[in-house]
Length: 138
Image (cartoon, rainbow, N blue to C red; front, side, top):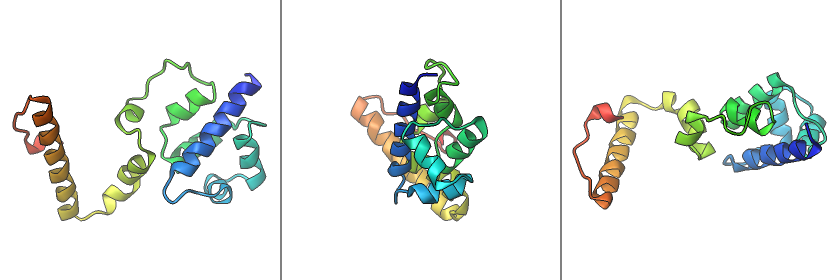
């Protein structure tokens, strides 16, 4: 693997870490994934590439599909698609649905479903293809 790939991977990890709201510090992320602060700094600066288990832990901590991290690290071809990454480009939303959805009350979950239905209807009207959507759409 080229040092360019290491550098690009590290820069991407840094961007993902900083995209979380509130952004994680290197120290916070290092503790979450069980590595030293220095090791994470070496990853982010492109001096080293983490192993597969560390990539899996990074995936979980950052809310990024593992396939995206393995692709960025050069372990998968760039053409490998991640359906999840196509659905949720926003890391904060991905983390919300992974971690927080289960803590919502049934009423809160239904409010969110209603909001999504309203947005779908609005998009359909804008596109001129309005049709009714039932609860099974979500």
